[in-house]
Image (cartoon, rainbow, N blue to C red; front, side, top):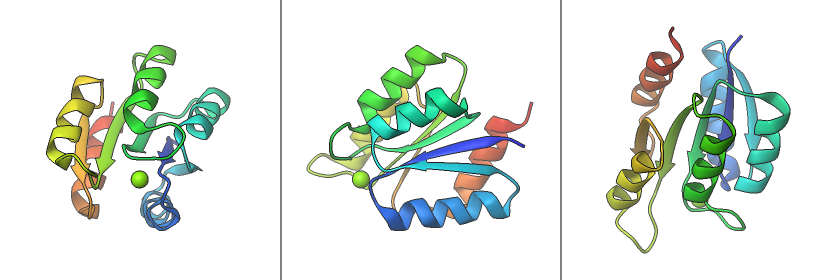
Length: 122
Ligand SMILES: [Mg+2]
């Protein structure tokens, strides 16, 4: 079973995405910030990471960069509602940092799932 690590400071998003992925046959791990996410990444070696970009303590861009250092092959999807900066700008930047796909909140579940399936299908 493919493993997906969700990193988001919003409990509701973690819950929603977790249900979506489990319903579709994936094993799910969830972290509430980048530090916890990196730890779970090291411990469980997931196949794909879905990370928020704006988070307290350790934000998403740094998290993506660190995960890329640990594993250049792992698939990464960035999600963001933005903040002070235009969300599109953040998401473009996330792709430069190594995310294959990026989505702005509110998340379109169908599109996200298609991206996940595309990335995890050999
Ligand atoms: Mg956030």
